[in-house]
Image 1 (cartoon, rainbow, N blue to C red):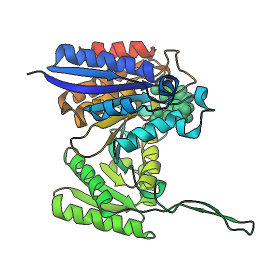
Image 2 (image 1 turned 90 degrees about the horizontal axis):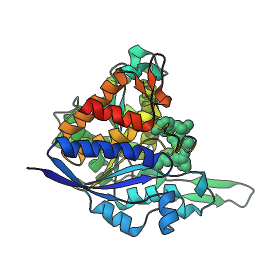
Image 3 (image 1 turned 60 degrees about the vertical axis):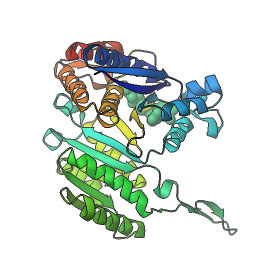
Image 4 (image 1 turned 90 degrees about the vertical axis):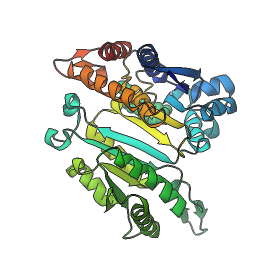
Length: 362
Ligand code: NAD
């Protein structure tokens, strides 16, 4: 029986629409060859939404997103909207979307494709075969904690305050996501905090340990101080499978892990909320205004984000595998967009990269 899924597609700004056009080719291929059909809602977010609706995320767009099985986004932002009020800036649309959809777990895989091994600044023997997944808590911690602000002390000095705060339910729900994912991978979770100097880190460690004992004792759990994790990521990244950590440390560690792979145009991400609720899937990169509209954008990060949607929101892991291995084969054949171009390879446009992927899938 054909399975039908509802997707909201938000191409956004800059290279977002170009990359999303290639995702559409993959969607059409899936409909033509697999027992899957899609009901697609396309809408604007970011600067495009500001131009159309006067806000970077319209209510009706948000409602469509909430009523979907998954949301696939391109990227937002660009110099055109630099002078727009802060609360209506393109990036605010994305932050609002994450908040309103209650997406508390951000998944950032760092995967090194053999064909791109030279794109990493680390030695090939360190990153060969690398496949790690960072699960970052996305809605709590120091970015949201109260009190916060800048206070004038009246003596020529000022004080800046942010508060790192976590409650058990927040640690528990992101921990569950990490343990569940580890079970489908190499069954290991490394939990990172600073329990040695922060009470919130001590609580994090105790709660993750309790969750592990109660529900996930079949998964290997290791605790690591976040600063050591940063060192280990560049020393020996292959020791990790799933890393779970808070909002601030996750922000830093996921960027460090991403750069083990070396290429921004290849990095997908997923943001998940409660089980059964739609996830948001988007590339890690921004709207790349410097190359927008020139056919130079690498669409693979957006396509790989769509593959994550198939795996995590649509229960189509088999089709996600097909797309990921087709990406690998296209790269092995030396087909490259300019950002990942190397000696002896063939440089292609955004659209030709999408075509090459479809040819490989077919
Ligand atoms: P960026 O990621 O857009 O670009 C950084 C560099 O990487 C640029 O040289 C760009 O050409 C290149 N690049 C990025 N993606 C690429 C791809 N798929 N293929 C080929 N080259 C690629 O970051 P930036 O320049 O700092 O930001 C530009 C705009 O994007 C800003 O308005 C920023 O706020 C926004 N932004 C949005 C998101 C998002 O939508 N999630 C994330 C980061 C930045």
